[in-house]
Length: 471
Image 1 (cartoon, helix red, strand yellow):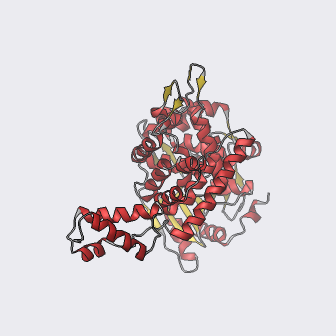
Image 2 (cartoon, helix red, strand yellow):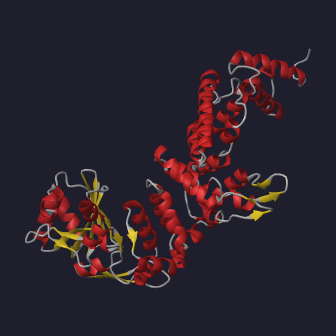
Image 3 (cartoon, helix red, strand yellow):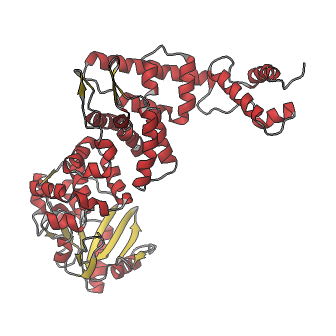
């Protein structure tokens, strides 16, 4: 590859010019170089290392660029960032690092390019291309990263025990890169992750979740989660998930392995959605099964109420991992708690009333719920597989028919509480709620259409029975 030609971009010319004017060496390093060699679309960020002050280099680059983009300076970390043509360029001074056992935050000293490459997580991320005028585009590869790219191997530049113990987040990054790139983690490195797994406990929940989200965003997340499981990391991070990897037998009756089933569901959902929170719902949809598992001589293995308990467990997981406790958590919770509803519906006669209730409860998320439930079909019996999908198609068509007619997806009471108070000259009271609930139930049961006149007539009859109207 002609690296000089590959760097034919205005931003690299400007950085090279700025470096020359400041008399510092600079290099583009890390993910950009890796993805350039792999011919992958690079993400909208580029890392620049300066043998000197990264902050001064960033400020100089800004002066030389049109419109002089704003430079964000992070003095604590000795880094700076600017944006050029929708790309974030991060500048850092070359450095060497040392670590304390109880923290992943290093003690930093100024260093050489070699020092900076030594501190990188993997050989394929230690590759650097010179931006200096005397050898522009020259590749620096001290650890054989180019060969590792060719052989699809993930190795650490230094002893993996040191690399992973110093910054345990690198263990998750190893698994994430393996999953994203289709690379194999070198055997010694893999063993080191398993050996150092407990070190992940010093990493913040936010950092862990960021890596989990990236694994969930791959085409086949199961490969990443199986690596997490085999190294022991998953049992530390999500013990609720590994608890599903238990198959028991009583009186000759067994149940399916809900752990491997869950990973299949996550893979199944991937072609149908890029929404990481729906993928989280797929990952957690059966977590209530381990604590609710019971054996009944007549019914065999049961998991009664696992969806409800699973929904409560979702909140605890989100709290423990410092995940957002906003609508994203509530969405995952709703999907988990409703995950069996369409399945039960597809196995019975699909009534308008049942579909109305499904759409009412799921609201705007009904399509996501159906996508999750279809992904939940993991049977290897081709006849059952075809039958289940056919049944779901019937449910989907029924949802469209009912929604077009009854408009319950964004349900708004045809008669508001304020109107009820005015009509019957009532102050806020339980009777208002009772009337509103009765109208809603009548609409969902199909006793009346979802319109004002029908609701008004029904309300007057119900109010008379409640003694709100004197005859």
